Length: 238
Image 1 (cartoon, rainbow, N blue to C red):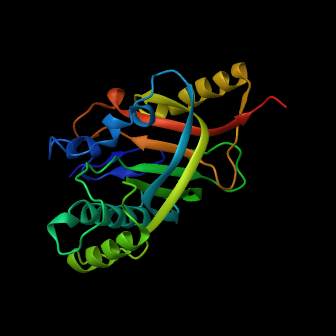
Image 2: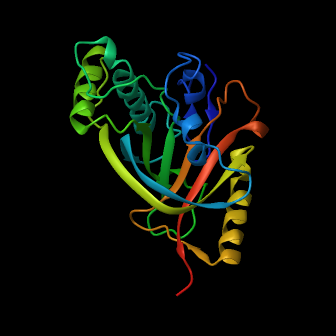
């Protein structure tokens, strides 16, 4: 099938999106609908405090466009574990407190070492943590079960998937609509907003450029793609 290049250079290869999953079960809990403030910001910058959330995650480095490369393999493993957890209620393994939910959209944290600004042309220098959010009732033990189960059933090595808890804290975010080639202009709006409102970017070794991918690039024209862009910030007032 056709592939579509995404913001940091990885390509959409037909993986199911969170939006599609919502059609599966009308009654399933959907983070995008229940916690809209984290997934559906306005098209102008806003400050938000993001609490601790749980994810399954994969980490790596290198060009995400490499055919059959580390990134694409990692995303496949991530989705295998995500759907093993989602469908666990149909197995003998029972997760305490489980309720049916929609698999949230894919997200990505991106950075380049020793770079104050991202060089979009140097994809080989990317470090990334790709994540899919999971409900709070899922524990590290549950994720370990899903990794082992998915590896066996899908005949895919999912050992690189990990349980991750992350509290992003104070951030600025915006809904970017359109081609990812235009993303720097949206980031410039965020930076201008921070300057006018007494905040500063706070990206460092533990706080990164964050994107949440909301659109199915197979069905939607590039000018209509929706991506949440989120940057960590701190108060600039001393």
